[in-house]
Image (cartoon, rainbow, N blue to C red; front, side, top):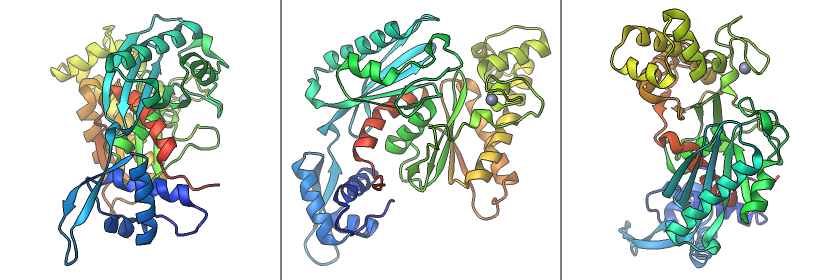
Length: 390
Ligand SMILES: [Zn+2]
């Protein structure tokens, strides 16, 4: 839990700390908030009054206390605000409408024809978002903003720079284009970081101080939360776990390196490896389904993938000493359990600090919608989550 500070100039920071503390707890009293944040009872009381006044928090029954009067329990009001989350994947867009608790209340998915340019894709995003708002009968005034998760590399203004799967999208200011077309403020992040933020807000990352997220999609990416803060790096390029070298001298990667995790283990690479070894050209989906049914060739192909993922997991844990390693994204499919087991065994038998603490490896619970939910959470996160003023 982030700690508050009793310095007088940091009111909004403390408000964010209190709000996040209430969100992370399943019902909490003012006294408990003071205990967890290090803020004085008086400061907590003032902030809670402000949050109640703004309708972000509500009083929700009482709990007995030792002596004295019963304590009032506080909870986030999930209906106090909504956000739209959009995940732009080269193959499809996923749009969710989520409440302040990070729970999606409506979702829609549209597939994209290969080669569509920015104007058509932006129009499809706006149309999908508008149809969700209409279906939920939600007026624009209740929407805090839009979060956009898209493939990197991205710069700090939300411009895409030569994304590997999208040839017409070099130097496209996607954030500004969407903001102009949709009429809400738009926040953005790369898809893997958005998924990691979503898990922090409403999934397996709640209250976990430090975790890494390994994202398996058309490509392979990652997100990183260190000491309760999202870590993005100098140019939003941190946690590019897909470009860890796992096969020295191996397959050429679009990044300019060889033997990257992405070059060896993205769906297209799995299809190519399977075809090269067996002579059978199968889709990634078919290989994963065959793996589940025990097909010996598919089992051997997936075993090769788990070895690479396990090596990458050990490097991630050695670099960042996290409590939790989450794996998720649309390319997990039927092999997800095998990936998790291989990574869990590797980090707890081969990582440097294995004798000091165990590292949990879990399948991210939000599934294929993780990046879209994460994008929506990004709106709440940037609006409310604590960031110390720089
Ligand atoms: Zn690479």
